[in-house]
Structure formats: C-alpha cells, structure tokens
Amino acid sequence: MDKVMFIEIGMGIDLHGQNVTKAAVRAVQNAIHHNSMPGLRSVLPNNDIHNMKVNVRLAVPTDKDKVDLNTVKAELPYGEVTFEVIDGGMLTSSGVVLADKDDINDLAYIVIASVEVGY
Image (cartoon, rainbow, N blue to C red; front, side, top):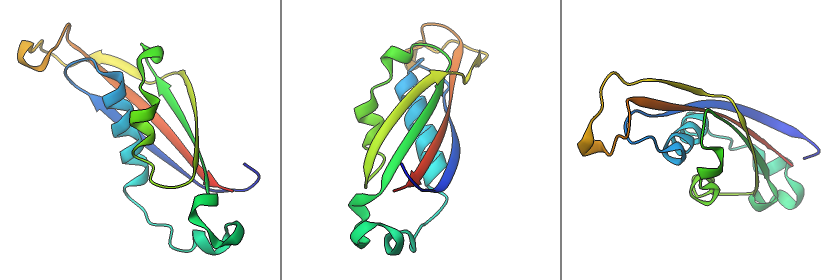
C-alpha cells in the first residue's frame, strides 16, 4: 500500500465457545462499522472502489492457525484485502463454563484488529 488514508481499530470478543474466528470477525466489524468514507472513491485510482487496498492486522491470543481468514474477509466488502495475524489480544475468564454454548473451558477470547485503508 503506497498511501494509507485511514486506520481503524476494533476489539472483538467470543465470551463462550472459544471461537477465535468469531472474535476476529467481531473485531473487524467493530473497527469498520462506526464510520463512512464517502470521499475515498475520489482519491482512488480511476475513482474505482475496487482499487482500494485494505490491510487487516489481527492480534490473536491463541489458536492463530484456527482463524478462518475467508470468513473475516467476508466482512470487508471492497478492495484488495491482505492479512497479518500476530500474537496479541487477551485470554480472560468469562466466569462460567456454559455447556449449551459449547464452552470447553471458561476462557473468553479477545482479538484486536487494525484495519488500514488506502491505495
């Protein structure tokens, strides 16, 4: 990416079920669902929204290899999307194990996302 226009930060949590992909999706949603970038198209090559580049950095506390990046990518409707998955985030207790939520332990998975948008 030659020019970074925006960087949005989000946090996502899976309280029960220990699903790192669900936490990553929520982190990306949190990062992008609080803004609109109507002027971005005017600075993109050929004024084409598909020329936008999106780099997503996910800080994941455990099970990095289990993040389904295609599922996360589905949250980003435009542009050429790349990912970087790094150590980070947090594991913390949810305070209870709920069998009906597929808990295998009491851990809540917290993922942090940085979404860089540019061209």
